[in-house]
Length: 340
Ligand code: EPU
Image (cartoon, rainbow, N blue to C red; front, side, top):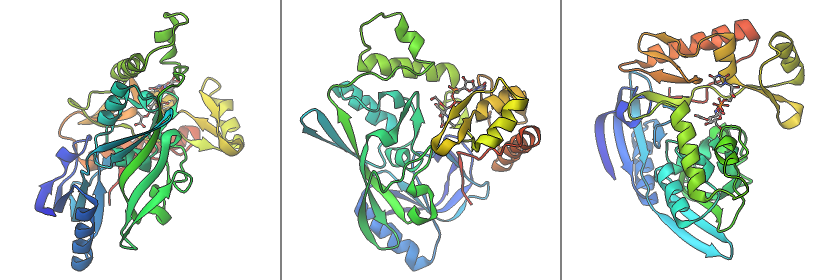
């Protein structure tokens, strides 16, 4: 177990915000995780599990306990007929795994190209983009239960995947720390390029179906056009989730904003577009206040233009929530996890 003290957390996040961790532990194996948990129990310290840091807002005051930085590496490939089972360490960079799967000719995760973060985090928030969600390809998740002090394999069904959610985000699943994920990929499959941003790229090609590599390239190009480059800007991608509201709430909203995009969701509910609300109702696309702002090409993406504090980012996000609630009666819930 490698334990460091007073480690700056901002460089470990894509938002580039956050103070010092009292203790910081690079966890490279399930055994190291067990040791690190034993240390936190012995010292009565709170823990916070950090992956790629692409969906968190860390306080300026830092974290007073132990940050468990999961860096468990590796991919194990197993072929069974047309199916390929890839068991991937939770610390692997998500897009490195996608690139490797595409290179080997395995379908299933190509639409999720370019998403920042780690493999472990991919299942916690059920990452999704361009008509795909990671839930569609997860076979099982290997975890370490901090409560039981033992490993626990969680099936895809038990993961209770939902839009940007899973058991790991709920109180009952918080005890599980993801150590590896098994994905079921396919040697042969049909490209899923119907999403409105992808379709035009392939419409020109006529009837020839796109190759895996072409799908990945198209997704990366769309992302580049819409989202800020995390090498230059501090950001966590979409800051809020799309609101999923009752039909009555949607009707009241649509009566006021008839042009707003809306989609059928589970249980007769309706999914609205958070980006559209920030852009068209608040007129806040490209809005900048001090060091923070909304991205000029995607209003749902909040940006740290350099030197922003957590306080500044929170105040900006709160102002968006307040204005959205006043103008639309809809509550925007953060997708980003606020570390307390
Ligand atoms: N829109 C606007 N103005 C904006 C942004 C969006 O009017 O500034 C409206 C437009 O109608 C647009 C529609 O919203 O056509 C959808 O926008 P877009 O395709 O850019 O995606 P999104 O729905 O805003 C979601 C995910 C993204 C994911 C994209 C692509 C959430 C919260 N976000 O965004 O995920 O990449 O779809 O599939 O579900 C992330 O989670 O961090 C993330 C980037």
